[in-house]
Length: 216
Image (cartoon, rainbow, N blue to C red):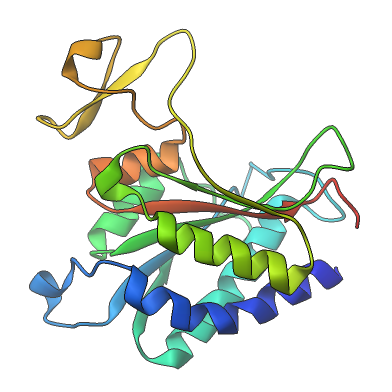
């Protein structure tokens, strides 16, 4: 896919964007001022993700591997991946637990979107509803550069609160989301990657690079 190639080429430009926008928290543990990035290629193993010419899980991994190589070549980053093979399946909790074990400064979860409408398209980024974990500026930079490089619509950065039959509320006291008790705080994040990031104290972004259901 030409779109995938354009997105991979974009990663070179993103290197300079990442450096000033990620808070470095791991340095006290490691004595190393390089930024520790965990790239999380979404899905994998028994979970293929969205359908396209190939599965979403395949494209997620291709983009993550290319990003890892470019970031490491820059020298300002230590890069880990939650998975580096197609056959590995991880729960959301396992992905963020791994990020915690490597003292990650940020988790970038790499995805591609899909829609019942083939005309729906563009890049969108999701950040935390919790202000101290919200990387809005970084998310905006990523979405604008992906859109420009790939020639697709920039849908921007979103914050999605939890919803459903059982609502979860974020407790600052316990640093955890509590089901059904609004007295502890505001609504928690909807996306598990972002919620688990907050539980481990790691800012996380989900980047939906494009819609596989849109062949343009």
